[in-house]
Image (tube, rainbow, N blue to C red; front, side, top):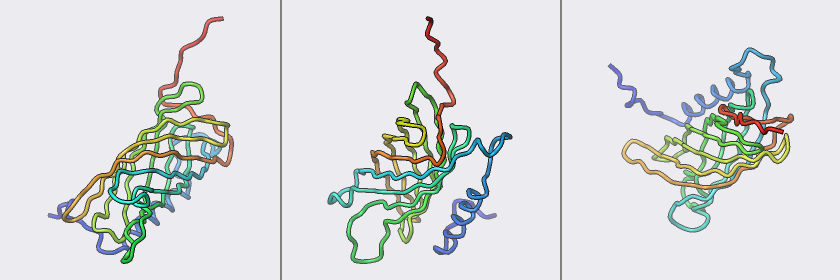
Length: 194
């Protein structure tokens, strides 16, 4: 009997195939609603963050770019490429990562939305290659196409013989390709009496 925890990626080719299939599913418009395709919107986001990695300022800086799709103004699925740090290296670079990142808009009041993001990724060429992410944030809808998100969270890295974790905080800027009015799963239903 094969224990699922003992399965290991044997090469970066296997990892690339897995992420290629996730990306193709993403592009094919996996939809969770019965309504028309107008309920989904593509977006692109840049998200620099500062981590608590030891070392120089370059070791603490972690930028990424995310491309994703949002459904019903509540749920998004995205693919993310980034670096765990920007420190100069003299040997094989182990800072690049690819991540599958779903996101849920939990609660909205006015132009502010509370977000939750769990992520699953792989750090390329690293001994701690498995990356898990748990992030929470507060998103501000500046206008229907531009959103800012101040976020904080934790990355968990794991390999065959070691694991570690890193906390981070950052700000992201998202550009939606059609106007969007986000709302949370638990909207504010209070009414003002006139």
